[in-house]
Amino acid sequence: MKRHPPPGSTQRARRLRSEPTDAEKKLWRLLCEKFPEARFRRQVPIRNFICDFASHRYKVTIEADGGQHGGEDDKQRDAVIEADGYQVLRFWNTDILRNPEGVAERIAECLVERSPHP
Image (cartoon, rainbow, N blue to C red; front, side, top):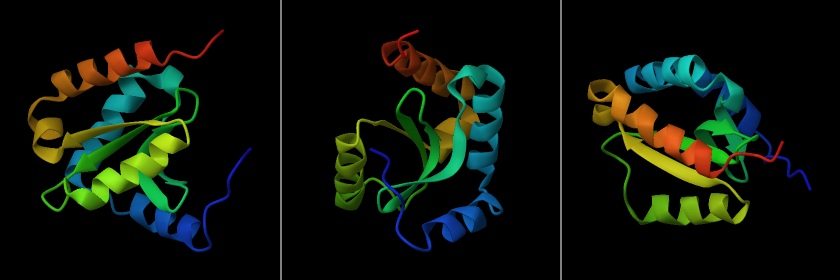
């Protein structure tokens, strides 16, 4: 069953799409170039949260995390998103900017694991 995001989430997601961080720009380029079949989208409302990137086809979300992330709030957020069947991948901004090949390799592994049935 499709769940609709809370009121205001779509407008907030649109605003976030227009102001991406450097890491989000680089990750978006990587996702579009290396994983077009996954059909990733940017700033996607899922439940009460907005995920940086999501592939509904593979049920994967990807977060580009800065210094404010990594605490208990993120664990609870991930648990709610995972309860909807998504796998959450998190990468530090520095990893995205300095090691995009490693990030792409981890994403590729995840997509192989979660490959949809033909």
